[in-house]
Amino acid sequence: MNRFLNVGIGTDAFPPTTDGVCAVALNYAKQINGGLGRATVITPKNRNQLDYKYDFEIFRYKSWRFPSNEGYTIGWPFDERLHQAIVDMNFDILHSHCPLATSYYFRRVNEIKRIPTVLTYHTKYEYDFEKRLPTQPVKDFAYHFLCNNINAADEVWVTSKGTVESLRKVGYEGDYIVMPNGCDLPITNVPQDDVAMIKRKHNIPDDVPVFIYCGRMIWYKNIRIILDACAKLKNDGKQFRLIMLGFGADFMAIKHYAKKLGLNDYIVWTGKLLDKNEILGYYGISDLLLFPSVFDTNGLVVREAAACATPSLLVRGSCAAEGIDDCETGFLCMESAHSVAATIEKIIANPDLMKRVGKRAQSDIYISWEDSVSRAFDRYHTVIDNFNSKNN
Image 1 (cartoon, rainbow, N blue to C red):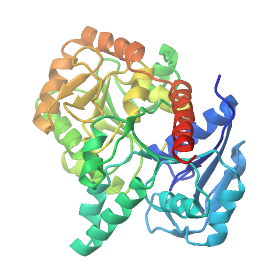
Image 2: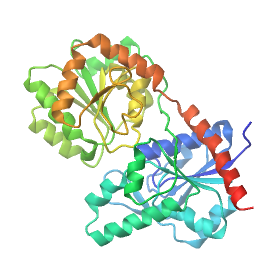
Image 3: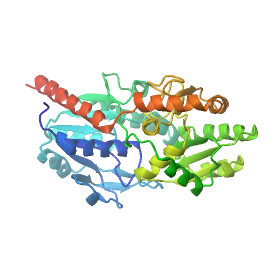
Image 4: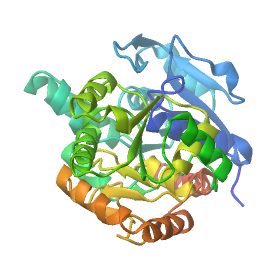
């Protein structure tokens, strides 16, 4: 039986900010505090924070507000009093879910007292660095900073094997452990009465296929491919509805592009939803999740959809498609609007196959956060034992 551990969960963003890494940090904290040990979330301050809602400790450190619509802040972990504060919490292990500010914070803590440290690499940072950083010297500095933070960890985790390619691109050459994420949503068979109610709310006919995209509304998740594919289906006379669930920096631009394609009557825009029952309902009325992203390192939404027996259409070879067998536990296509549209046409022509694949996804690829974090917690002990053997 694993011994009790006091764990520091580090993340550069935490609710009220919402994204995949926030969800991961939140679920690690919930599961560890649910009986495995004690977890404290370490994250930058946010002027909209509602930390009283959580029944575990959240340690907020100094931050600067980042000018965006998504509520991000930038951590400022340079005060020595902050470093000592973490030392005084007597953590057995530190686990960072972001190799930027909070990982640098943990590096500074380790200059005072060595604490075993794990880093999970969730995000393909080269996308943002190449797109947003203005000059090559600035990019070089960012990659150097990122790589130093990664190298400082005692063990590096990735959420899929495909993520390793990104690690190598940013300069990390060391070893790694694959530690998959879990799913926020429970396995659910959404009642037909709920399905009918949601369809009535949005005037969705019973006899048309319903597709869903769920996630941040940002172009580099290949949302343009989804919209172009749907425009092709429309122009070919196919009837369908597309649910766009989420919000993000490119939300208005995406809506404008959909209007330009003549898709207004085909799309339901839900905006940001946080209520799990609402999200379950939208997955429950959907026949197919469209997720052609090659940016995501794991794709939590694929398992969320599987919780409701909704299969996913994914790009072959992407991290999100890792572990998916075509026409068995999901559907695979190439990274193009033409391929997405052509594959959708084949899928909707065989509704029995679509249902069968959805059921297989529910039984075969779904993983709960309880199982995911329990596996991670087991590994914490190995990290600590390895650390002690090296330092004794």
